Image (tube, rainbow, N blue to C red; front, top):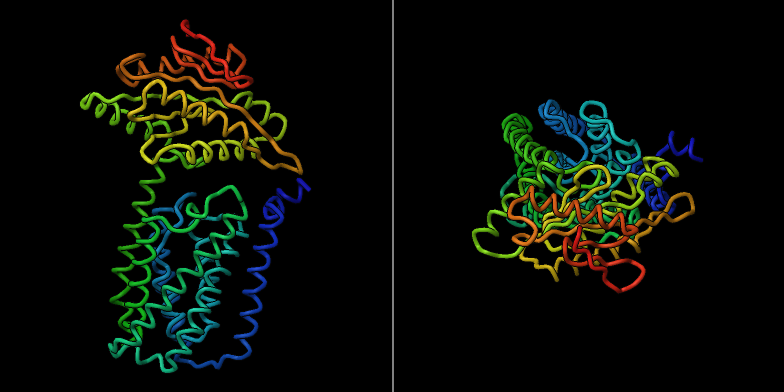
Length: 419
């Protein structure tokens, strides 16, 4: 099974996820077969489809040199998928994402094939649904280019339907892959909602332009390419700040954020706490189960830490199995309470592997600004010494220099004035 999983990564996923992905792809294939045999074929439709796909390919080629590393997932290809759904029969909406996703796989970044296949199926099903609804409500789609209010509003509504269905299909897959993930984390946040609105507006505008005159796509292409390059550049900047495995801030980005918070705390006279967190005996996990499982544990711990912290707390991966957390406006009591909550939640976390559950514990050192140091270097040194003391005392505990340590086995505190 491990050999098969290495050759076919889909087999390494959770069974409910495998069933869901296969079901969506099968439904997409059934829809393609149904509309392929029932839809009329006209040369103008084929010409428009080819023109829109050529524009999509041009966008992909224009941004190819920027690359698309892991973690960069948004593009503006809906500017070409939506016009296909609104102006052409549903079969074209099912075929469009297959062509462009294949081009992304070959020309931009080769990723796990089943993800590309599922993305194509999800986009195709959402586009075909929007196409069926729009063509039912507006039998003569040429009225869209006449500027009448009702067809345009219906087009906007169907574009919104496309966005909702596509997001829902992908969100279900993400939640099935990790049931502990909150729905709000796999649906919309403020940034993704804004991007969906931009894509929706852009797709409707391109559809109207395309309906007016197919040659006008030559004028629509450069602005879309520019917007896509700007979006991709912004995502690349964000990706440069994050750790690719955990999605947390990387060490350099975390240090910049921490320095900013420390300067602000000095200016306002507020308290501030720093935590260094280490996964206990992490090497044993790698040795016993392999580095891929170790990566899953890292991701799980990172997600647990992030879910238990406030939005303005600064959390990052410091390297290896170490994490760092900056707690603005936290005093000794608050820092101890937060650290203990993190230790408890991580201890209850379980990573499923080969019909078994892997559990880990963490140790943490805590330092308080103005008590254990006045700048980032001093706070890191104090927290690191406290972490070393926590390991000496048996791990799975919290230590604060010259204050207390909290063991996992009992609520008693241990005086740690020498750490």
